[in-house]
Length: 106
Image 1 (cartoon, rainbow, N blue to C red):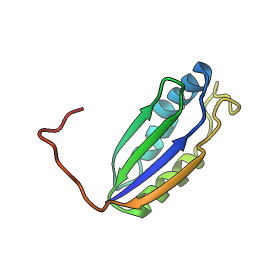
Image 2: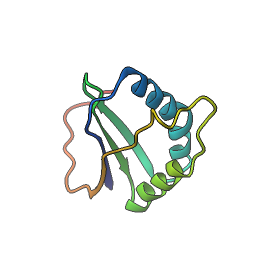
Image 3: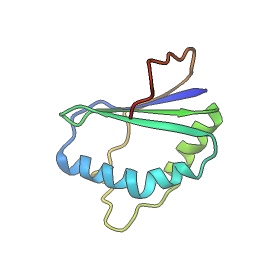
Image 4: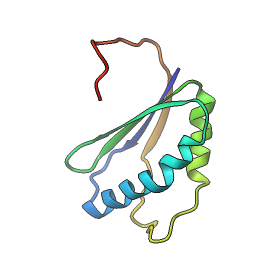
């Protein structure tokens, strides 16, 4: 299993966050769902709009293919590229250990 950490380090406005949330639900999530091997994604967001996205996949290649699918997707009508600033950095790690803590929670 592999994990990808995608960092948005700087504060972002409510307009930028709304644009990102729309892109995530309407364009990015459907693109990633078509890539086999993805397991789960967690979006961690602070009040200032900075964010870390944790994506888990069966293989490193699934994460790379997901990146390609996202970057190859076409902006939808109404999406403003000026509001979609992109990540500050992306890191991929092999998962070394997994600890279960009671029953799964959402």
